[in-house]
Image (cartoon, rainbow, N blue to C red):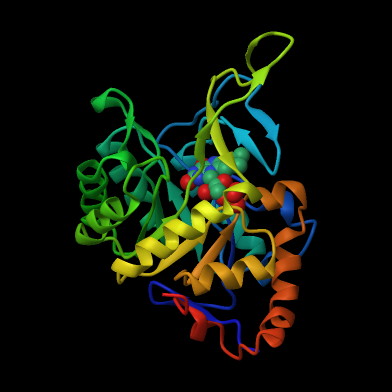
Length: 302
Ligand SMILES: Cc1cc2nc3c(=O)[nH]c(=O)nc-3n(C[C@H](O)[C@H](O)[C@H](O)COP(=O)(O)O)c2cc1C
């Protein structure tokens, strides 16, 4: 059973990648299992300066998923490049995916350039769900023009593949994906969290201090799958499927819809062994479905 796949020219042992923000910088999971079994790791979204994140409560549980409004808490790019990545390199021998965030075009470019200069970074993942301060806080990823502009600005300073991670909170995900592809994106990741909220019935107020948060977990899988399928129909660059993946069966379904690899997020927070369990079960599912090479099924449903 061959689980090898390719992500923007890099061969990876299997398609399983922990999703940004659910795996920190790998240190919390090193006690659980050998991280080298993973296809790759997407590290916590990084900004230019350190960020404390939003006020608490910033997590709310939901049926079949969760809401988070962590607010991009991270130690800032210099601490990531100078400390977190060298520490991760001591226990993890493969290239990592650097998830890059910014509140302006200039910030994205600066963070991406620093990440790109770092040896163990294999890919840049542009999180375009961040608010664009110059455009009244509207997310870069909800406007095709803004998404394309940030993609081409980052491509101009990066020699490594740039994967644009799209927001699902849009009317037409295909138009945004195409704009990013035309702007030079080497790959796409779909999807980030869906905007949601919950109320505290005693207080008659929102549970999250931020009022709204990003919804993720099992319940979003059909939405993510639909978006991957629609984008794969028209785009030629590789897609990383993400959203509600928690089993090897989900991985196969996402790849049949057009994904070349997958990211597993919320499942890690429910079961810290989720990625290991999926990697171990994948050959069994492949055998049952008579799949010899995983790459054979990419886009099989299209
Ligand atoms: C607590 C938490 C923090 C997250 N932080 C980031 C982040 O820093 N950058 C990013 O691109 N996505 C972030 N995400 C989104 C996930 O990477 C993923 O796209 C989303 O949760 C959907 O996948 P899932 O349903 O498997 O969790 C975060 C998600 C959660 C739950």
